[in-house]
Length: 233
Image 1 (cartoon, one colour):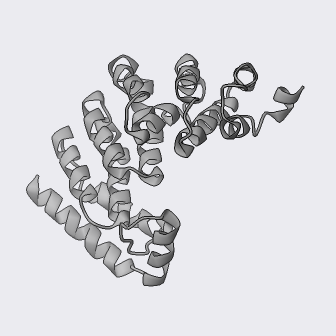
Image 2 (tube, one colour):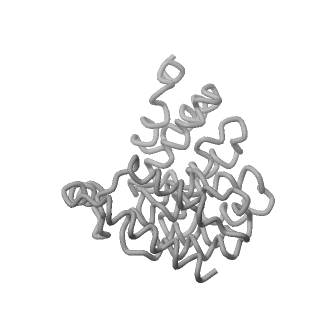
């Protein structure tokens, strides 16, 4: 395992160093409002690196999978961490309930929307859809956690779930956090509802209308962006 991890880290660092663009790095860092350094390698250029990483450094069990993800995650640049998340999502056979503590760690340590949203809407979504009985109790507890990024993750983790969305949980989570003034929570509520509106617009319209005085203006506006005709009729 140590050889696989060392070789993967060396490959990632070498590849990104060769692709580095200092001008782009400055702009990417400013856009993300972060002190974490960038190489200046945007997603299209990272994609071949990720493909090779997934193909040539595939973990042989879940323990190795976790070590690989954490090992890449601990590298200093943001693109290295993006690749860690890419590896985490690529090996779907290891996206299982026992990996939930790893994903929680990525959310808490990432503590910014680019990391958090990737984990929540891909890794956590997969778990709540395919392992609901094992995972929902903990994810539901996140709704009241002191860490804002866990609260956000609980709200948005069903984005993209479509007809497999647990509607009662989505609506319930939105109501439980509707009082918050935190921008990232208000935005999450709007995003979660707006996404589900593509699947059940009538249900979201009814929920938004019934709770208009509870939802923040931002949450209501985002939730109803694509169903204005239903809300205003």
